[in-house]
Length: 509
Image (cartoon, rainbow, N blue to C red):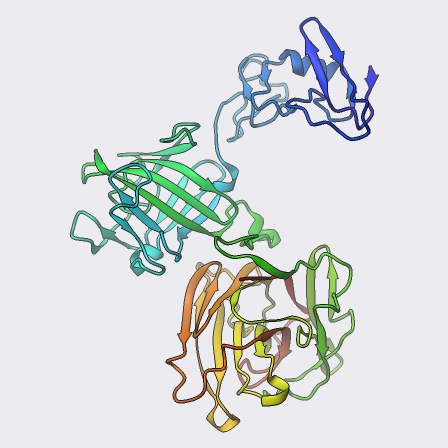
């Protein structure tokens, strides 16, 4: 056995002999293929057998590893059915020993149409938008509520919430049920060589299945796929499911994870970038304590204008940073309660942009978490004249619903507010997993989103005669209140401690 130094990564192989070609430079040299199968910087019998394909494995992607991305061509050597008592040396993406099943792991989960522009694009040629491209929020509600869920076993569930917009009936909203189309994955089978999948007509519960629109055809190219976005391309068809002379491009956004991650709180991801925007500031909570360049504290137990019961502290018992998360904890301390209220006032303020906060929320009667913003001129003008943008609020006895609200008014006696809410489906709660709470804040206009789905907006024409305060810099606040006029107060059902876990705060402009 020959031991390799970690900087010696480049190896060559010739038939009949294994030749080591050391890299004498101090830096590592990347190679197309490193046959160190076990990645222990040693060439042993396992590595040699893997290279020779003794077990029937072929390193298709030449990454030096024999894994799910490679083919098992010798089904006997792979213990396909020949030796059922032996451990399987190779399983495909569906867990079949010696199989060649293909499944893009990032596809697993539930998807809905994006509310951004271009959710549906139609043209006479592949990838063309010559005929139609949808505006932001330009689809009908019967299209936005459709949910497509890909499961780890390769199956697909389609949930149209009872109705679709029927392209073959003058785009009327009609009742439609089609829950389990049979899916076949086609590696490299797309229009331009991308991976694709086909829905099989006449199988499952669907005679002529579809994704997106019912004239979209049966084969879908996976044009783009990441943690939050799925772009599909398909040739259209007619009412009999035969190919027609039109082509669709659909853009979906992930709404839930079907990998089981929701059980451990993984949930909805936060994007690293948006087209046409730049990340100008973020706190990823990568350290071991609250970053005092970004955050300071409100302290005390003054009721905070809402008859709340908590005492805000700067103790690490109530706010801490570890493992990439900020945790705000509310505790019962004898007959009272302690919590934390962090703010970026005087440290980080912003005027316009997309504000994303990814968080997992507490629940329980009388628990009131909030992610919000106040005008930087708060100390001089007071509230509500400074303006308030509530990116997210939740009252703990309604753990499946969050609210987005704006407050304004030149003085207390003319205080104005408006807002809306959005609710998770199927009994899910915001304490089960992380979700993304956002506002897209432009001059004279603010839009609220949850998991990239728009649920509310306002503009400067909705002020009821009061000044519009939202064209000025604002700072962030994150807190958990206990009790108050809106959520009510804890009772015997309320469990303590409760926590809000924040993964990141990001500002794009």
